[in-house]
Length: 229
Image (cartoon, rainbow, N blue to C red; front, side, top):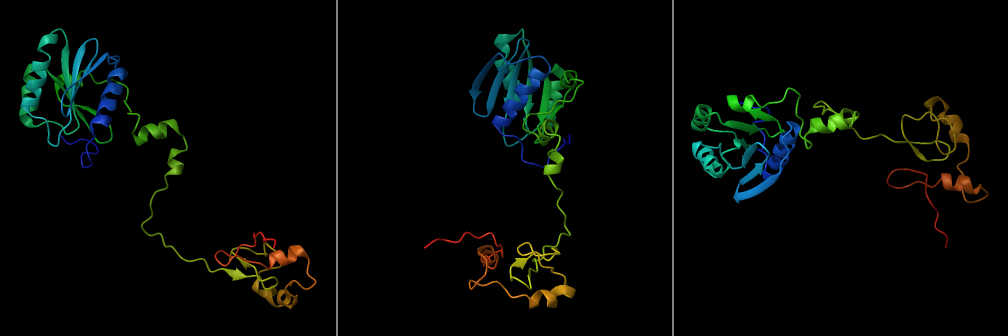
């Protein structure tokens, strides 16, 4: 069965555990006890169910389902269910269907998918959204989509062609109409008239004009603090 996000990296044990625990609480079966019986295996207990989380590189097989049933033998009053981030092979699904066992798959996006009839009967009517998913972030933050601009393949990055004020010499962004430093017009038609004005120098110019004539060698900004000697 192809599940959403199946071409992505499967959930690890930590994400699988949190997703399963949150889902159980979501359907009204909070976890009361947790066991760690083997590598790649966690067992969660609720009031009515023993739930095994199996994390491995391959789909869970029939042997994994039988091992879960053996572990549940001493708790015959509890129903059993398994959650697997890598899904199940056909023999495991067939075996579980015959015995009415609930098998759930966990997608890389944190979705819970019922793979057997018994599992699908437990699926809630409301949509479950795991806390770590992007959908959960979007739900919590109405502005989330605005924070995630869509990539544009045809985006062209071009260098800014800075211009200099003809009056004071401070570098200016080409979109500006007047100099941010001295207020002179940056329009080409007014360039000759502005150029006729003398550029302020340290000889008789006001301190503010002197500062305006200083520019950063990197960005052209005139916001420069003069060091006192």
